[in-house]
Image (tube, rainbow, N blue to C red):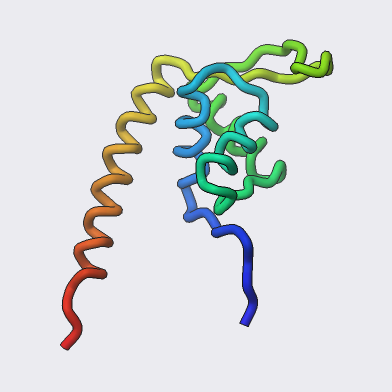
Length: 113
């Protein structure tokens, strides 16, 4: 049996978490990953290999936009921010996710025979 320190994200969940992180304001990729890790008590450790494709995918869909700037340590970094479409997508996905969690919870609370 193997033990992991972080949970694997369900497909599609990372985009939702990235949108939520960016709802707090413009951030570069490292800040987004750190925000998700901290808010999940390190249950979700987002790797660069998953994060940047998600950010680029959300940018292609018009949910986020980016611009270059300087990070807190004066390094060039790409900053991402939500667009109006991204905020609407976040609201829709949160609603869907809450329905999903509720339905799974109902199934799991069903008494065994």
